[in-house]
Amino acid sequence: MSLRSALFGIQRALHGLALFSIIALALVVVGYTMASALGLAPWLTFQAQFGAWNVPAAGLIAQIALTFLLVSLVFFIPSSRRILALERTHRDFNLSMDDVARAYHLCHTADRAGVFTLSSEFDAVRERLAYLRDHPELGSLENEVLELAAQMSKQSRHLADIYSDEKVARAKTFLRQRQEEAENQQQKIVEALHACREIRKWSQQVELEESVVASQLSQLEEQLAATLPALGYTLGRDSANVVPLGERPAAE
Image 1 (tube, rainbow, N blue to C red):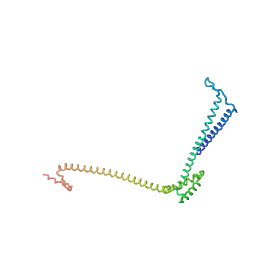
Image 2 (spheres, one colour):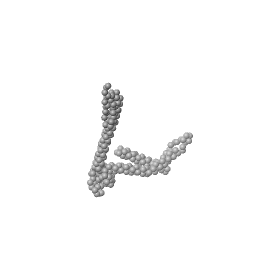
Image 3 (cartoon, rainbow, N blue to C red):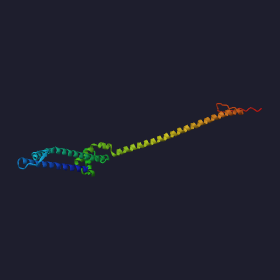
Image 4 (cartoon, helix red, strand yellow):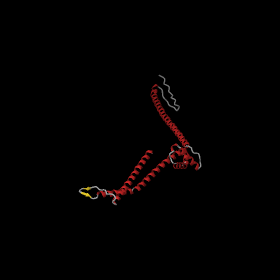
C-alpha cells in the first residue's frame, strides 16, 4: 500500500508540473503574440515551402496557431483538475474504507474473545474506541476512522456474542465428538459386516460338509444293500433307524 501511495504521489506531482508548464508557456506565448499584434515585438519569421509553393507569412501563421493551441489546452485545465480531485477523493475513500475494515476486524475479533464487558451503548462505543486507540497496529489511523469502526463493532455485538470464541470452540468440540462417534459406529459396522461374511462362509462350508457326509452315508447304504444279501443278511429299515440283520440260514 505504501508503494502504491508513493507512485500516486509521483503521478500527481508530474501532472501538476505539466499543468504549470502549460499555463506558463501559454501566458508567455499569448503575451508575446499580443505584443507582436500591438507592434511592440516582432512576429515570428521563417521560410516554409510546401512542394514548389512558398508559404507566405509562415512564421506569423505558426505563432498564431501555437497561441490558439496553448489557449485551448488551458481551457481543459479546470476539467482536468476536477478529474484529479475526483480521483483523489475516490482514493481517499478507498483508503479510509480499508482502514475502517481493518480496525473493525480487530475490534470484532476482540469482541468475540470477550474483551468488552460494558453493556450501555455509549460506554460500549467508548470502550471499543479506547481499545482501538491503544492497539499497536492502528496508531496511524485518524480518530474518525476509529470511531466509525467502534460504532460498527457495537452494532454487530449481537453477532459477536452468538459467534464468540467460546461458543465456536464448544460447537467445534461437539461436532468433533459427533464425528468421532460416527467414525466409531462406522468401524463397528465394518467389523459386523466382516463377522457376518465369516459366519455366512462358515455356514456354507458346514452345509457342504453335511451334504458330503449325507452322500457318503447314502453310498454306504447302497453298498451294504448290495453286499449283505450275498452273505445271507437282509438290510431292513424302520422308523427308529435300526438296521436289523436277518439270521443266516443254517448250512445243510
